[in-house]
Image 1: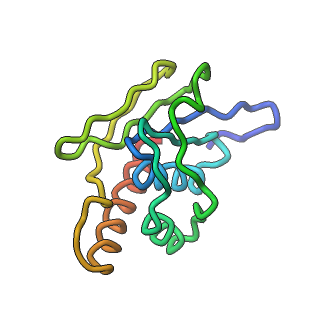
Image 2: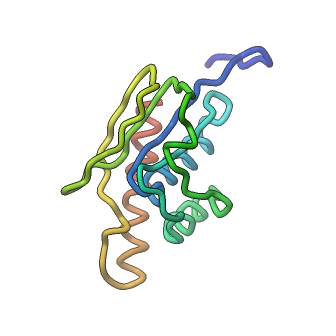
Length: 142
């Protein structure tokens, strides 16, 4: 384990998705909660909307609070450079946004839980499934 010092610079990570409402928000919250001492984490979307309340709900179940997060546009990050640019979209018919200033690019496709139609329980279950997949991927990758 690397011992962090005050002089250690955290690596910068930007998670991207289309709406910056669910997958990228959950990835941002999870990476911050697991490896905050190593990474400064952000998320954005090509067509930002608002943070999905189911994403807030299922992360809160793990003690991760994203209730104050907001959906952000890629334009807010123009001119910045990131160590990692990570796209987390790519389900059926899903086209991921591109950010030109990444040192390393990663892509992991996760189904869009916001696309699930059904009961409150169906939607909650879909968000939990994707939350758990994102968490597992983050632990394996970072």
